Amino acid sequence: MPKESPEIIITLIAGTSTLLLLGALMISFLFLYRKRHRRLLQERQQLKLSYERELLKSQLEIQEQTFRQISQEIHDNIGQVLSLAKLNLATMDPSHLPNLEQKISDSKKLVSQAIYDLRNLSHGLSTDYITDLGLARAIEHELEMVRKSGDYETLFECDGKSYSLDKQQELIIYRMIQETLNNIIKHAASQKIIIHLRYRPEELTLSIIDNGKGFDLTPITDNSSFGLGIKNMHNRARLIGAGFQISSTLEEGTSVTISLPVGTPIT
Image 1 (cartoon, helix red, strand yellow):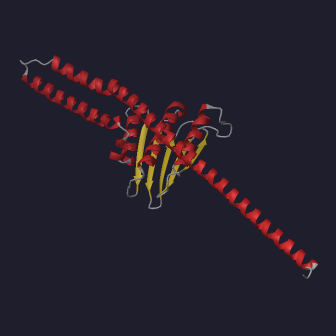
Image 2 (cartoon, rainbow, N blue to C red):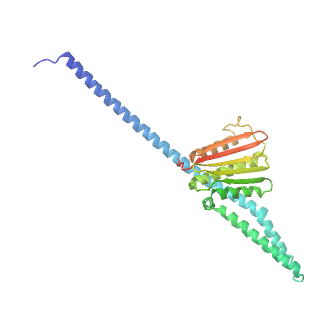
């Protein structure tokens, strides 16, 4: 039997080694791929859970905010209207017909106003009213509640043909608007609040502007309550695929902008 030459042996060893190396590389690649795939699935699941938690948190915050508004509206406005109607009824004198007719007419108007205000308030008892009214009308209603306090001049401008967004996206955007308005009321010392809503085929843009005292964004940290609030709105915007920007100038006011590309998938 002929002996194998050293060249053949070396070739066989090299080929075997190459195959083993390729096999090891393929196994390592598959291992790394599966590890990365599992990590991506875990991250996606974590993002989904974060989104669901944020959605639930927004729903609860909207309800809490709405209940406060309802309580204040009943106390400050509807209660006074019904008290005036009651006073008219209590002071009616059947012997003075002209005065009686006027009091009846005034009482009807007051009761009608109370019914109208209560109907508006009833919209806020469920977060579904954002979908029912549409985002633009819901924002306008929120701004009207601020105006009725008597402390602010408000302006709402809607540009473009309106369209519906994903229900969850609208809810989170609406809550971000509420949070921004609350910050203005608490900190801005402004007299005027303007909200611009722009519908474009490719993007929805929302701007909230006040003429208050403004602030310096530089020293804000995550440890401050205001810094946490800004970070929270950034996170909410990220979860629905929206952009969030805030700019402020001392003694000139603050502007908050939310921009959402149309058709953006929820994380």
